[in-house]
Image (cartoon, rainbow, N blue to C red; front, side, top):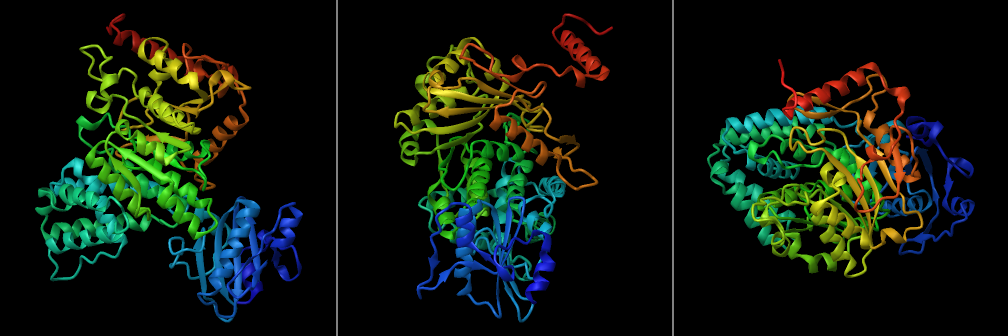
Amino acid sequence: MIRADMIAAIGRKYLTSNIENDEYSYPKAFSDASLTFCPIQNSAGRKFERLDIRFVKDNISVLVETKQNFTKADEEQLSAYVEYEKALTGNKIVAILANTKNDNVKVWRGVISDGDFMPKETALRTMREYVDFYTSKINDKEKVMQNTYKLNELLHRHSIPEKLRSQFVGTCLLALKNDLDYSTPTITAAQIRARIKEVLEELLNSDINKAEKLALLNRNVLNGQYVRQLNIAAFREILKFIEDNILPFINDKSTSGQDLLNLFFVTFNKYVGKSDKNQAFTPDHITDFMAKITGVNKHSVVLDPCCGSGSFLVRAMTQALDDCATAAEQETIKRNQIYGIEFDENVYGLATTNMLIHSDGNSNIRQGSCFKLSDWIKEAKPNVILMNPPYNGQRIHLPEHYVKTWTKNKKEDPSKGLYFVKYIADTLNSINQQAKLAVLLPVACAIGTSGEIARLKSEILKENTLDAVFTLPNEIFYPGASASACCMVFKIGTKHKDMTNPDTYFGYCKEDGFKKKKNLGRVEQVDTVTGKSRWVEIEKEWIELYRNRQSVDGFSATHKVDGNDEWLCEAYMKTDYTKLTEQDFQQTINDYLAYLVKEGVMYEP
């Protein structure tokens, strides 16, 4: 394909050349931006400076290097341009080698690495389609959720227990992604289990905790009595359903596709027994929001001390990888910058599988109590903490010296999870490690002005700053836990009283564009005309108000607070009366009447 046709195919309106022949000179671009240009050269001493074709839309750059017939050696040149582009713009990248003698192309989403290579991309797309590599349009979240519900029913029919389903399906998904053959006529169920084990062994080959993780997965999944009882017909039916109805709707080479894999776990874990309904699995769009407001990038060292299925770790890793310019940077992130701790043994296995699905074969996830791993946390030196601690932690979940302070009849953590924040902050402060910490907590922690919650709030502010609090939508965890939640953001290692501007930002984020849907939980709403997600625009507004620390009636406020105050936007923001309707008034009256009936002050006739 000639260059003119390539430009026409992607979109001339997005072409950004700065020298003749539609080429792009990085030395000139760096000079124009008052930046120092450091040329990259290969082993033969050849410097790479001019890219053949460059396109930009929003924060996405498409880089095309043309050759008569490209070879493996040409990838080095394209990789240099990716590094330049990252240093120049920080944009997300689609990198392409394209032949001029024929229509052959080779495409990477991100850096030039095996992990970012997209083998199914065999023809040029439009710029809009390349932008979609970093959006949700090429994936189908609701379809994944619908099929997860159907898969749950299928597993129920084959007597796979609810607590085992996520781990079992995650393991099957991982094996299918690595070319598991289950259709050979003579294959047995035992042979399928053996092959899945081989896949896990290969993926965990460089993991220092390989033996422990394999033993756990074998014991709880592959060799468990409920999986062993599956006959070959049942095993094939389950594997085929996953292959036909889950994998086709997930493009795991895009950011949104990786999020969808995580959404699969979160959605699946909502269909658990009543005894587990207090599990507050973090919705995927909230993990995305929290990773963004803490500024996760390629320099971040991220810790989740209560990592559950690994949703924060997956999201943080995805965001950090998108910030990379080279495969070496990506590998460093996977090996050295993502840390997690999970107490529950079964959920720990799920987190391990989740990270493996996202191509992290050497994940630094530990099984145990974060309160017994303080030295490990100090050694990691995290500068970003993302967490959703248990709100009803029992005595076994908390350290003994803290449990001894509870009253004799107290069965659950009186701090509702706030003690986890205090512990992590103290651990990092002990080594003078500054960090940004974002945590999901029940609203009770924000409005508590007495007792253990008030004491901990004051203690935390002695050495740390309350940067922001976001009131989140009602039933954010539906249909899992019923708690109303807020997101608190702290600056660890900066005393609240020492801040030049001590005002805390409070966001009233009650509308996220998601709606409850039967059997699916809360579902993202999409504009039927534009095809755009409502959440994308809402999230952008939340983040802009926070970063600019704007007070907007009905949406946000700033206020100076201490440990004795309420930490919630509703206490400080002004009401925007122009947006109130008669329906709002009637709803408030109805809610108040319902409250009076519930409290026994009034009785229904």
